[in-house]
Structures are given as structure tokens and as C-alpha cells.
Image (cartoon, rainbow, N blue to C red; front, side, top):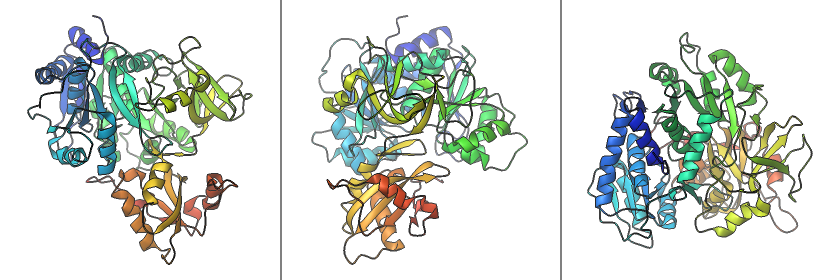
Length: 539
């Protein structure tokens, strides 16, 4: 079978492994949907996808169109995505934590022709859809589909056809739409299955458990497509539940788990349980585990955490996994470049010596630098070409290459805050806060956080006669919570008389970090992290 699309990969798996598990949701009495769980074989999954595909095809949807989906971490996400993928329709995953302004931007910018949401979330799509510059139908899963507009492309989908338009935070303040092809998705799946070393993936035997969101590339592209190609099962949690984590790992027979840095920290804080090592996990795969917790985690729970590096933009074109021995826990080692080229450069793009921090730049190869990368930023060719200047993709991440050739993570772009695995553009939060009537000037920076890696900290110069107290700080945080996804709101507020600036009046964020320091040790910093809770969920 010629595998061109992700749907083709599912069809091939259903043909040779129809009875193997495909997609699993563990039982959970506290979950509002499917409390008894869900378990689909490859054959059952394909049948549901094909039924939904027929509905979309009958309504005229096809190659070259986009459909926005607000379907959370549910089987509906997979079913609708692959049904649309079979027809050549690209999906626009909607972050379920987005507020009205954020969804309005996404629906308008993406040029999607339809928005599909869970029945209880349709209102979260209809309000934004009413404010965009074109008519956009919004339906719930299972509702009759409106007739699609005329197709832009008449031929059948191919490897370079867009599979998804995924929005990711950038330094410009508004999310960038990364155009991701079928080749991109299949490339990531193939890379994961074949990486080997400390991360062996056995055909027909793996059960990969992840709490990571399907609207991000890790779960949607890496975990899910890899399990299709390996004839394994994706065990998808709705989110990370520390209290039931080890029970889910044990009862689902998970052999691989995916994590973010926040998870090992939380699990280590749980009381020891005699059954916490009673599992079949071979390895955990993720990023940003606290170096001080890496070795204690492995010693306590009995399996290695393998760190790696990638970006939404780089896909399988450039990955750096620490999957080859020696295993170096606690060193922030991200390993060796895997079938790609990587350099560490200074501000002028000159390569720096070994053991010297610099910006990581990557490419697939000299002859095909962009192969298996994203296809570009939608409606922003200038940003795409700027990132690719000199034939190398500029990641913004600061790393160090040892003489051995191994790479070690040092820091990230100064304008990006990494909180619990979410990239947050400081400028986006700046832009919202500066509109508050009590804010004269503001600069948002990353503050260290012992659990979430980094937290959002807003350094605020208030307008005249405004009190610099907790009430004002709470008002500023609530202002952000009403306009941004909850995780983007400041967790710390620091009031200042003025912001440090350069001779050209640019804010010196490095000086701000020195001034604010660790807010937990700064008596003038106001801690409002308790206000940041996922809507309708227990944190």
C-alpha cells in the first residue's frame, strides 16, 4: 500500500493488524465523558474514521481546505482529523484553554471554512466566529454538516499536502501558523520508531501512555503517528493526574511514557507507594526534567527518562535525542543530532568552539536543508525566510556542544517563557497588560519555578496614583485571565518606578531578571500563582 497521508498509514495498519489496540482512554469516574474508558482496535478505528470521512465527502469538503477542531484529548480528535486527512483537508487544532480573542485570531488568520467543536464547547467557537471578517459555520460533533465552499485544489492529497496548520507562540506577540505536511507527520513517526538505542520500539508490542495535548505536535505527530507505524496503542489521558498516574500506567500495561519537566517533580513529591514500581515501562521520553530530580526519579521508579530536543518547526528534519549511550541523567544532555546537521553559533552566525554556549541552528542536510521541516509560517514568508537565513533554521535556543559531539541544553530565547511545556510569548502578554488603564509600562519576563520550570512574571510601572498592592496585582492578573489562556497570565507581579532601558530606549530584560531575581526570594514580588487554574478543572 502506498502510504502518502496519515490516513493511509492507519489503513495499512488496519489491513495487517486489525485486532491490535489502536487508541485507548483509561477508565476514570471523575471524567465527564466515557467514564468507563474507550478501547479501539485498528479495524474499529478505521471504521469510525471512514464513516466520518463519508459525511465530510458528501458535504463537499476536500483537498486544499481547512477545518478548525476544538475536540480536546478525546477520540473525536483522532476520528475527525483522519477523516479530513483522507480527503486532503488540513485541520487547525484549537487549544481548549484559549479565550475569545485568541480563538478569533486563529479562526480569522487560518482561513478555515468550518469549525467543529464538542457539543459543550460549540459556544466557545460561535462567539469568535461572529467577529471574523467572513461567514464561518460552526457545528458540534455529530451535527449535520453544512455544504462546503468550492474546492481550491482538485487533485488527490499527496505527501506535501498540508495535514495541519498548528499555531505556536513566537516572539512577535501573536501565534504563528506552522504549515505541516503529511510528509512531516509520517517523518516524525518513522523517526521515533527507528531511533533505537535507549528507546527501542518493538513492532506490535508497544503501549505508549501520554497526558500531553493532541493540539500540540508531540502527541499529535510524534506519539500517535509512531504508534500507527509500530502497530502499537496510544493510551491518551485527558491530562496529567498525579494521584492516578501509576494506576493508569500499571493497569493499561504502558511500556513507554511521555513526560514534560513538571511531571517528574510532582511525582517525586508523592508519598512512596509499594506498587509504584509495578509496571512494564521501558523508558520515559520527554524534555526539561530538572537536573536535580533526574537521578532521584530514575532510582525511585526504576526506568530512564530520555531527554530530547525538537520544535514544531523542525519536525523530523532536525531532532536531537539522548537515545544513545552513555546515559547522562542530570546533565541536561539532549544527545547527538539524528540524521541532520546542527551547529552552535554566535550572534553573527559564526560557529563557536566546543563547550561554548551559543544559538542552535539546524538543517536536514546541505542539499535538502528543509526536508521534513514545517512548510513555512502561514501568511508570513518574511518570518519564514528570516528563520532560515543562511540556509540554517535558527531555533532561538541556547545550547553547548561538547568535544564528544553531544549537545547540552542551556537556555531558550529570552522572549519565550516555557511553563509546564507551553511556550508563551512574553510580547503577547505585554500587549494585553499594556491596555489595562492602570499600566503605564510593562515588561514580561520568565521567572524560575521549582515545579513548572518557568513562570510568567510581569514587571509593571503603574499609572499615577494607582496603589501598588495585592488588590491592583490581582486586578491585572484577572485582566489577563479574561483575555488569554490561563497559563499565559502572570503568576508574579513586581511593581517598579521605571523599567531599565538602553540608550535607544529598548527594555533591558537581562537587567530586569537581575532586578527581579527569583521572585520567591523577593519580598516585593506579589505571588498570584494560585489564581492560575485551568477552567473547570482541579489543578
